[in-house]
Image (tube, rainbow, N blue to C red; front, side, top):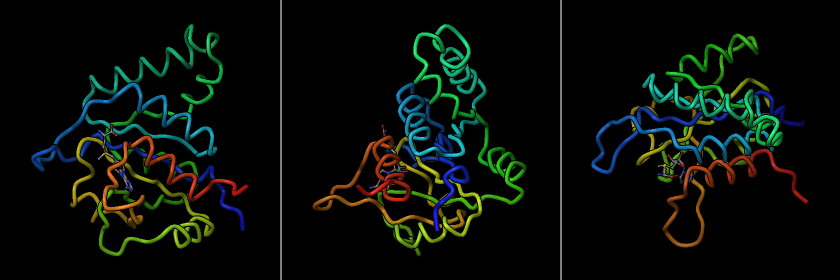
Length: 190
Ligand code: SAM
């Protein structure tokens, strides 16, 4: 069975995430996260990349960056970048993303949490690939700041096992975590 990657979405959550002290905060959108994760979404041919931020000024800024490269001067200057940034939708809440995906695919997406720390009941990559083969739309949710809150993770339908390297340290930049996880789930094995 082949996984239909157009049913797989990435969401980058700027809320609810933790800060260093463990408080629930909203983080700022970064330009690098827009560009790099959009290129990953394009490379693995995902359904889309949702940038989730409840602050209107942040969404407005992200929207301006995206439209510069998708519609403006940037689309002619760098067509590859245009092709990638087209994958981005900027929304205020994950529920908006879920509603859009449900309307597009005819069934509600399941949400999969990711974290550097292992969540209760986290599933490994072979099991997640089998879930994906089953066909329903699915959102892989990633954190910013000091990561997704425990409440958010517990409210997700599933959690994915953390990526581990060698030794105990595994605090990846979110862009690298998205790349490794998409490759484990969807990449071609040469
Ligand atoms: N400021 C950081 C940056 O620039 O990337 C953001 C850190 S944020 C906590 C990193 C996010 O990447 C996590 O919320 C999680 O979604 C994912 N992540 C990081 N390390 C991971 C790992 N070892 N396994 C799975 N996901 C991981």
